[in-house]
Image (tube, rainbow over all chains, first blue to last red; front, top):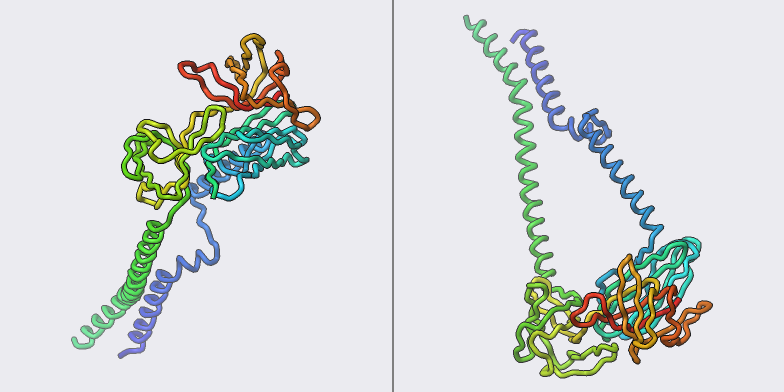
Amino acid sequence: MSRESIVAIIIGFGIGLLVALSVLFGPSLLKSLDFKLPFLKDSQDTQIRLDMDKDVDNKNDKVTQELVINNPIDGGVFVQKNSDVLVKGKTEPGANVVGLSMVNQVQSTANKEGVFELELELLEGKNIIQVVSYSDQTKTAELTIYYAKD
Amino acid sequence: MLKTNFKYLLLTAVFLSIFIAPSALVWAQTEATESSNTQEKIDLIKEKVASRVAELTKAITVGVEGSIEKIEEGLLTLDINGKQKTVNTDKDTVVSKRNSDLSIDELKFDDLEENDEIVVIGEEQIGTDIINAKLITTSSPVIAFTGEVKEVDIKKFTFVLMEADLEYTFDFEKYTDSLKLTDNNFEEAGFTKIKEGVKVQLLASPQKNSETRFTALRLIVL
């Protein structure tokens, strides 16, 4: 075998091996280096997602200025020994908040973050709880809670 | 001649080595990956089956309301907006009646009748539509209102409330629990505290054959 033939075989195997390695490990290598090809579609999608996130944030900002009940969830079911439920929520800072259940009523003042808590009593069965926040505007929220004594 | 054939053979070998070597490597890798993927799929299916079995045996606490469609021995078929659920009772199930003044009377299972509107609280086995009832109570709807008093009729003990530009008339009954909020304290307050222009928040039950007339159950005058 001539010297040229041996060189050709070695080069052939070398190139073949490089192609094989690049096919096998190229994608994962690019991924690990966090190398992103500048595809227009992907960047557009990312921008849309960012815009959507902004919208969600804006909506949340608006919601926090309204009356929001964080706990308990509407339609929640309580099977417990005592009939109390702690209603937690957020409204205008300093607002006068009045909670009315089918058993009792509680008044509270929202703190500087607008957070308030009301401890209300439940009747066995279906309960309607009304929470009203009085400040410059009157804001109302209602909850349905199911309660059974354990 | 032999030398020329050998060159052709050599070039073919070189050519094939360029294309076959990577293909062989890729094929080998793919086979290994597929084998690994198959095992992963089997594991995933096993996990899903185990998860589903766990779900089916899991019970959640539910509160539902509907009308009684059928009553059998210790069993109720409840119609909840067109969907049927079976309500199973036992000796520990509490059956009660909530009166229009929000007082509660105990009932027996036999006191329940078809078409009664009831609330059931209990545990439902997921995926079975069977509720093991802890509490069954008959109930009438209660609605919350808040608004400004527009008119008061002291002879009829009624008042008209404006809420979202709509007018509602409320009957003030002997059992109406009426309070006034003064300096962060609630004080008992009679009908006379309800005056034109005051803000009121209340819970009330609807009266039959009217969409705008209610009975005041609990109210706060602000």
